[in-house]
Amino acid sequence: MHNLFFFGNVDVTEIILSAFVLFFVALIIYLRREDRREGYPLEEELSGRLEPGGGLLFAARPKTFILPHAQGTLAKPNSLRESQDLAARRTSRASGSPLEPTGDPMQAGVGPGSYARRAHKPDLTLHGAPKIVPLRIAEGFSLESRDPDPRGMTVIGADRVAGGVVTDVWVDRAEYMIRYLEVAVTPAPGAAPAAVKHVLVPMTMAVIMKSKGTVRVDAIFGAQFAGAPTLENPDQITLFEEERVCAYYGGGFLYASKMRTEPWL
Image (cartoon, rainbow, N blue to C red; front, side, top):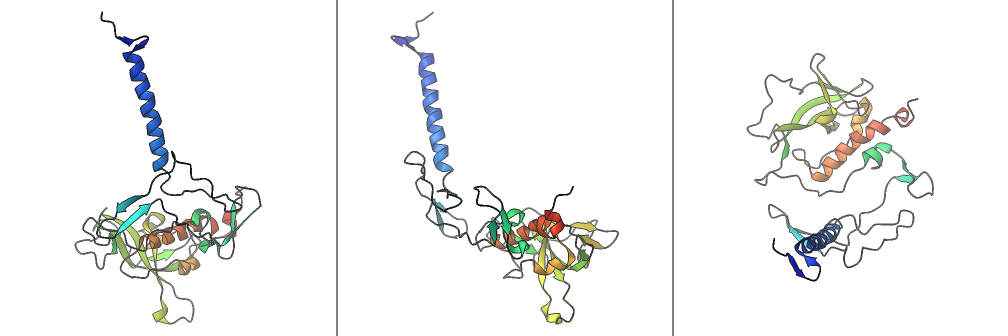
């Protein structure tokens, strides 16, 4: 058998092991640099003071990303900080204490109703067209004839009170699925017909009751459909608006009534 020692007590196995250790250390440093592109530097919870950025080894250099469909570029990391003007207060001075909404908890943007400040642009298909649109402008799309058509059905909340009527279905032209139901909110007594408000309901939070001809949404109550966020463009939804719509109904699971914030037992 050949002698695999190069010099002294250094052999092939030791060289391979050392190379692996060096590679693994370099991999950890690389991953720690990359995961600091967003969300850093950290902020001290009570004072808002910025924590150290990690030093030379763990601070990523800015990288410029080219956005698709000629939407420009985006450099990360950057020095931009999101505002902290939340409609909420801390339940105590202790670090890590939960936030308690002030005012309308459905609009506070905390807890299950929190949302990210995404771009004020619609999500796009590979061809650069808005991905999520109502059926009224989605050429070539239709509902399966064997499935119930929710258009015209009454939408009821968790209290079984009517909140409006489904007027259209919003489809995802890239994933070929229903994303939202468009609902004409029942106007308040004495309101002018022209003041009818149209809102979206996430399909994942709705249950179509074919036998009853209704759509049930347990996230909120019937009167709360009127408070759902509206869209700037009636025929498209931006990434930021998607966050707001989903957060409103998500927050309803906890904040729709005082009873939902209390213990069950």
